Image 1 (cartoon, helix red, strand yellow):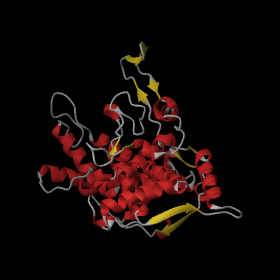
Image 2 (image 1 turned 60 degrees about the vertical axis):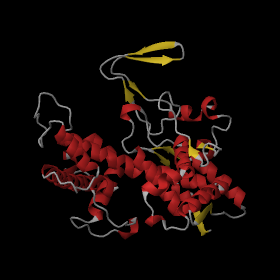
Image 3 (image 1 turned 45 degrees about the horizontal axis):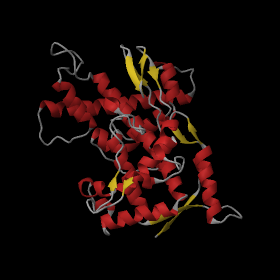
Image 4 (image 1 turned 90 degrees about the horizontal axis):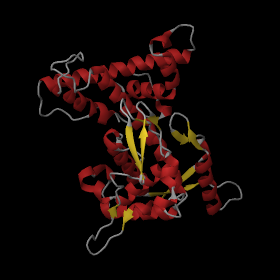
Length: 362
């Protein structure tokens, strides 16, 4: 995530491997973001400045410090991107921050958010920071939650594990996934992408609200035309849309990634991924239209990369409890995912510690 957003990559560090953060250490960025995401409700309610009050709980003051650390990281990355843009460096590393800086300067907004032209089209510095934070927020937790649910669903379906393992082994041909590239393999992994889409279909991480804006909007419903008043917030029923038998068939509630695959044929010798329609689609897992999730592609690539790294060489199953066979353990895990998944800030498994899994080499 830090590489895609800021152009800085750090070695992975687990929760039990934390150390005192250095100024450019991954813990300063990663742990600050984790603190903000875990405690974002007090941040929204009280505001950053009020969190430093001495009479507030220690956890609030820690949250205030985390916001300062994260702001410092964003400011440093913004200044580096701005300098690189001014120097017009062709070799400038491409990441979200540099792209936003380049776009804001190209559209007449200076470093202070002031107008260089007659009208404002670009992003101000504050808007750049806001977009960076949203990208971090969505990419850090939404994808992780979806992956946790998806891997549990895979543990209930050994046949699906074998199905994508066949594809992974065919595409990579024994190559270490770390030595592969996006250009060479991603488009050839439709089954893995199907697992990502099917997971998000059944368990959409974020229920994104939409608004009509300052003008009324017409909504076509079959032969009817409904006028929605201005400044109306609309939150679609994602669960109903993503599981309605009219669109998904009689097995609409089942985890069936193969529904996203177009089988091979004489005209198309390779399987293809069945893309949702661009208009009037019953699938809006990453929202849709001009304001769809900006991290959509990133999330899909990340999800597929994790599947390739795990299921190319391993199988997973739920750990059996006393008196259970494998089938009973899979049923129990499936029920846990179905009934213990709920909305906190995002949709997630509420008690993931109950989903104990065993991994074995193929």
